[in-house]
Length: 303
Image (cartoon, rainbow, N blue to C red; front, side):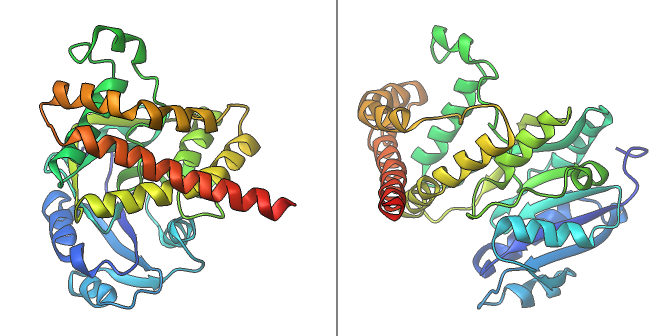
């Protein structure tokens, strides 16, 4: 680590994060040695709770989001970065204890411009086990099933998130900053595509596992519905910027829902977690519901 990175800026974009912010900031201070920290920058997106007060208590300088949402918050943060490398975190992630020792070293490769670990929900257990299964599946771990060897590295965006990430500042600026989307999701997906198009890579170390602080299944289902509502805009952006098709289609979303009782049962056996039998179909349903409702609204607005 020493010799690669001298000093780094830490950035975070937040909105009403008071519930989780104190332990999150404490963990960052424990994991990232203070002697390497240049500045701590929190971009606040109009919080109405104690987010700004808590950030100041932990030595973070607070700036208002110059726009709205994650992509604007990320670009506002980038405008304040003055170091060769910078780190980004989100308000509900407990950083893995070995993150600093392992993730930034990925940037020694000149072609790797961004690197991160992976994160799993702390609760409920069924959601955490489901996320672990998906990660193992797309890495081709054949002890889950022999046919999974064909899935190795097939999930291009797997693990690529902005919540435990290190960047080469010059590359992100060269790409025009973080991608701007009209929705509040997909910034990391589009950044991954832009990097590959420009000849760079985003490395993910799946052994470095952070904790995503969640409130339970109800919150997870709300998030899945939300992600479904964002898909059409994300697809538009992927087609606009790349020659690649979106990673999933409308028919694929519907098919995955109707087969989810069977796949949920299969995963529950493999992961030894019975609750996956109903959690997986619920997640698929709310994801599909968000997508279909947004699709209907879009079609009606076109007529």
